[in-house]
Image (tube, rainbow, N blue to C red):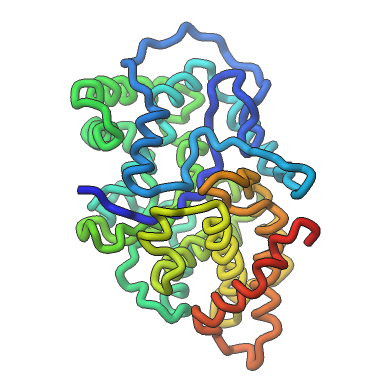
Length: 377
């Protein structure tokens, strides 16, 4: 059955083929790799199948690879050095064979497809591990803070143990559009290959789950409940960059804000079906502002402004410059400005304990948006 789900998948790009152009975080890297003979994989155009899958599910924020289109005459769009250096270090550990397998077998796709479509959201495979306590606590606070009904949203992890589960991989491959025989052949290959790869860390290579997203089918598939999916690799990155005290909470708050948008009509099946770069940028920047507002609010996370913005510099530094893409999230400068605005709204509110209604905050944001995205802002 065709559905019109609305994920907000903030994937930060992963692998282009060897020698490909730079991705969103300089992923077309000139780094040494151990040479290995090419492996023999079943013929499957994963890139095209994935594009078709995204179109069927109205997903417009999960690009593979996530390339950057820079217009330096209008926008400042430089990736954050800290994230760039961290990702370069991760990529340097992969062999050429690892790269080939990730690209041609879609290893970076499987956990997201699995997390989007599983009905076993409370199963052990999808249990939070890294920062589980902080994430659950923040999730509960989000539900209490915003004036929408969030009781039907599930918080879960993106599971990389899928690489050991042939049946789950077969399902993911068939959902992408592969025939049953090819799906099983690929799944059996992945199960045998991943444990043998030192670079892939037994499937825990962080860039395979460097993602977080909110997802809903707007009730068109009742068995697929609304969800927020947190990737282990994304949280690991921010831990290693020194932001483990703020990253899990702020990333989750951003994704929860997308569910708020679904409830107040900013995101609907119609807006997803006719998404535009400008429309997506609006919802992404609003989610940035809402997350910062919640994180700094005394009834939210009550975080220090300096810490929120310090993390924001890194988090929003992986904004994108795909100005013509329907998945355009806003430039790093615009995303930082939106977060700063959210903090300023909270700081200017009297009494300090007052929480702005979601629709009021939306209207105030829309009035501010032209200033936030102005090229010379």
